[in-house]
Amino acid sequence: MDNQQQTIRADIYLMLSTLFRQQPTNELIAFLSELETEQSESAMQQAWNQLKQAAIESQPQALADEYQELFIGIGRGEVVPFASWHLTGSLMEKPLASIRHDLALLGLEREEQVKEPEDHFSALCEVMSVLTGEEEELQQVFFNKHLGTWFESLTKQVKSAKNANFYRAVADLTQAFMALEQVRFSANTASSKTKLKIDVKNVTEYEQAQK
Image (cartoon, rainbow, N blue to C red; front, side, top):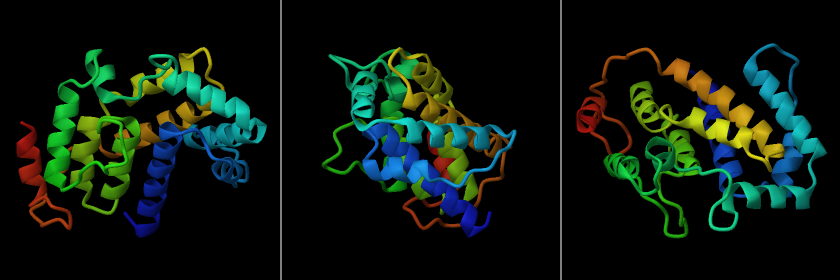
């Protein structure tokens, strides 16, 4: 994969991370409103077009209210962006412990100012953004284990939420992009013996640690 593709994928992961972690800033909405998109039958291009239009039609206060209802609420929002909840029905369960274990293998840890548990969708997108510069096999292992198992459940929850408007377009883009990533990682690839730049000796060791 060339560097341009890696950069694009990293940027999309970071954008999704930002959109799910906090209400969109005026700067992000302006950026999305001015996207150069193409008319295409592909799910990804259609999703970009829908998100651009949603950004153009959005109002700051409405966006703030929507984010509040979806992700914060009173006690809990309509959408729960945590892997543990989607995989087990409860928060702070085994998927979170598994993610923390794997992040330790990768030499990554949550920053002090971040309060959400590491199984938050935004946190996992941030990790994938970092991993786009690493070997394909490592990306595959992390994605298949920690995102591929539940992103569809999350996007369905967003699209069915009563207060979702702008975020329906965000969910469509998330679904389209993650589906492409899932196809990328669906084929089994041979483990590499090359030492990675991050703090994992090799992919074989990483995969064995998952068993």
